[in-house]
Length: 486
Ligand SMILES: Cc1cc2nc3c(=O)[nH]c(=O)nc-3n(C[C@H](O)[C@H](O)[C@H](O)COP(=O)(O)OP(=O)(O)OC[C@H]3O[C@@H](n4cnc5c(N)ncnc54)[C@H](O)[C@@H]3O)c2cc1C
Image: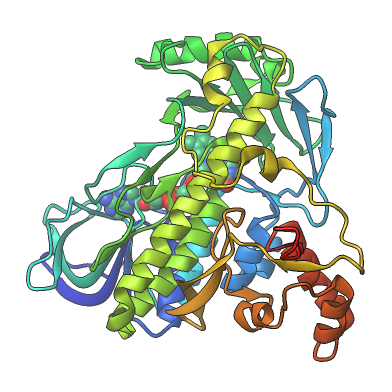
């Protein structure tokens, strides 16, 4: 701990919070050559909810150069989940490819924070940042209180990263994207879980999640509507939790074990911030947005968002003329993440058919955030007809080219990109291929075969076939209408 009373120092970038999001952005920005200080209030390892990491974490760990370290840390790896949810679906869901992890978050978060230190980040820990006031003359002044000391030290910084988790340190307006949900959870010992799978179950007015952790402890969690279960005082919480666990098929046998922690409660609702980024600040991880825990993807979402944020901050500091573009890029990615997750969660809640009339389920079975689609709903649901080699095609009238912010190397730049109502976002590249020249090579009335031949001259035929397939299933290419037919 390198803090002294009333010490005063200046840094280019200050990150508040050393969870997955804070450690990720700090490491990346230090690797990009910035002077970074990170302040974390707790001593690590510390407990944290969010122990189930899906395989989607693997590419994120690759991008950080930490996959091997995490793989060697001794976390559990299960490629199955036991799901009591819909009467129509299988109860054992096997994942394809490599499994994710069942981690001890204390240890996982400590690995990430050590990796930030190793990249040159100056870490003040344990030390708490008090609510920062607005920057003066382009500089934030932060009061930082090292644990066990009475006097705060002062840290000055040009750029502030709020990675302080759900409570968020910077003020701002949040939009809710789910029904209010509380999570009640506790850590159990001496419970026999015969296998390392995650358990997920639908109850009458609640849903359950449980999983063994690497040391054999079981985390059993119940998600409820705050109106339907008393959880104010520790006693009420304990009672509500035990009553609900007793109703679960998959987790009730925890009650024959030993509860080694108090019953904890936290807000498990989803939200996003209206202003995730400004000229001198950025919010990352749960400080920016929170998705439904049903997906078990909060950690990977926080880390992926932090990787994107590192490029945005790097652009703002090194290419100030692209500042607005970089901010737009970040806002777009945040809204996309929220929208995709809200739709996914609503679909999953709607699949639950064991308690169809309960308001708990009805409230969650519709997305709170609906992205306007300009194509007819019916049309989007239709799978396009099979594309034959003889099929003659043209570019869909609704496809346009618009300037879009994209990542190029380590900065955000503007590029022309293809936009279409069916695309989640404008697309500038298909793999390594810029999309514009590809579109320019298509003549109205070309057959699928002639396109394959044209592109096959400069690319392997398999790649040309992939491009054609992508353009067809996304309705960028549609069946040719001759002028006589129009
Ligand atoms: C009930 C529940 C279950 C979940 N289950 C899963 C799951 O199975 N899988 C999954 O991937 N995700 C899960 N999540 C989500 C996941 O826990 C979070 O998305 C993830 O922890 C976000 O990381 P973060 O770095 O943004 O925030 P955090 O991990 O919360 O880190 C924030 C850090 O900031 C520090 N801090 C806060 N204030 C200050 C301050 N003033 N000064 C200094 N430091 C400060 C804190 O001490 C903390 O270490 C779950 C969430 C909930 C609510």
